Image: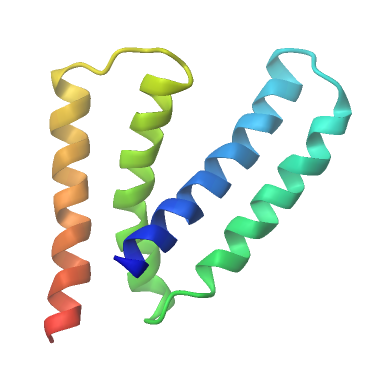
Length: 107
């Protein structure tokens, strides 16, 4: 559960940082948004260093969590309803990440 929480917080830090840059570029918001965006992306990079196994494996498994978190962001923040393809694709990707994480815990 600790690893899952770390993955989720890592994904949120990345998404928030990128979203703030997007707001700055697309919404003509103030450049001040780049400060919390940079802080969020720095937090994201630091959080990746806290994972206990080889970085390549973490990045691969994290990708599945990122996709699931991004789909949640799409539904809750952007207010875009998920369709069957979103749910199926996200579920398959998340299942793949779970196989990598659980498989290596038991190995």
